[in-house]
Picture 1 (spheres, each protein chain N blue to C red):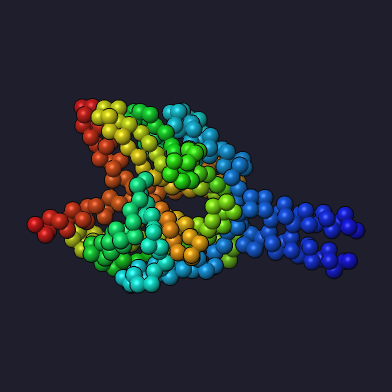
Picture 2 (tube, rainbow over the protein chains, first blue to last red):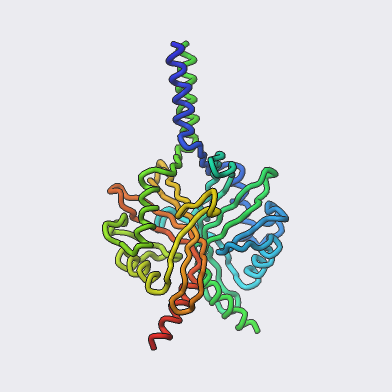
Length: 176
Length: 168
């Protein structure tokens, strides 16, 4: 009988931790990011930035980081240029729009990495230029890396800036 | 004793399938993605891993098909020399890309890759390094049926414009 119990104990650990990586969707970090995105959509940038560490490093399509202060200014600018900002995501065309796909992953320490706790997000950013009326949609991927204090220490953003740059430049020219 | 065994059985299922999601790294699909990157850099598109029914979302919400996607990817080599891909610090970690494959029970297998794409523009002479993320949804036949790319295309657009100007 002891052997049977040992087999179950082994199965428990081998089965659950083949890679040791855990993915969750409705956990505290995922829900915090869900709230963070809603604050952004609502234009409440102060509340949005509350979870970002003051010394966070934020990589926007680049290997050079910008500061939390820089990102705050970018988000405020976006809300001054665009109306009807929203995020959208559905698993299939015409499917339920859940705003964003959000999942959190805990990576255990490996031979060449420390343990990491990240939350990843995929969504389509939508907005309409206030001055030109141009609608803009941009698929976006963001990775948030959490620190031990429960704040976001690093952010990586991946998106195509081509259409955004064109619409923003046209909007600013029209406002002059 | 039966109760103890039942507790372990329950723990086994609850513990392993709290979300039911499994993440793997050096599995067949992750390795196929890495090999595809090697073939991409070698400009070899024969015997690839993509379905003919591929829906390719290159930073847009409206997909293009297999042939268009292949032409678009081929354009990289028309515009850039010395194309390479890397992930890591170059010392302790020096990979072509960080690739993981996730099995979502109600969706299927999705491979995800992150890397730095590097190339030197044939027309600008400028060397650029672009952080990239790509997601791949695998079909039941073991081919990629959906691909989602997330990366900045501003350098590619500028290089394309220079190539068009040079041709005029």
